[in-house]
Amino acid sequence: MALLDIAEVAERSGLAPSALRFYEKRGLLAPAGRNGLRRTYGPEALDRLRFIACARGAGFTIAEIARFLVATPDDTELRARMAVKARELEEDIARLTRMRDSLLHAATCGHEPLVECPDFKRSFENRAERSGVAEAVAEPAQPTR
Image 1 (cartoon, rainbow, N blue to C red):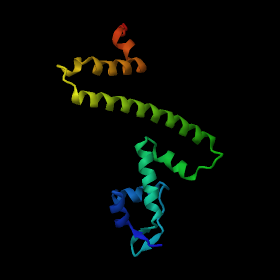
Image 2: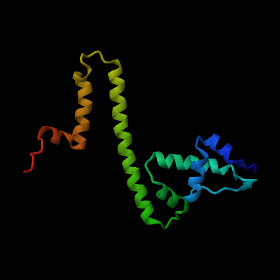
Image 3: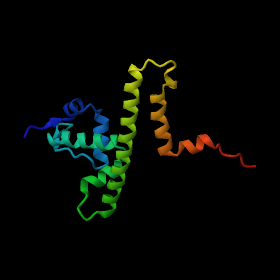
Image 4: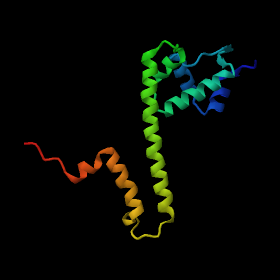
């Protein structure tokens, strides 16, 4: 097993060495040893960093990721949090898919102005109805005195 020094891991992962040291302090990453004064890591560190990047991209905190790394099948609280996050991600995926479809339509639509295109407007109306925005737009809140 060839060890990678901190500079090589930083280069391959796209992270700064300071980020690697930060992850180490938080218990997310462990060096395999040292080569002189430089930290060295096993090749599995790159897999760990890919997982961390994916989890961060999904909105998990550093503390939550640290819990993932030591979780057991008996950690029901963490599993419940994962299920909630999975539902949130499904909603994000659906929202982004609708936005992508609207943009693809807009890219080829000849309606002037574009925002008046019935198909384009319909995609936003459907989103507003699902999110409760339709009621907020239709009936503005009365100011409190």
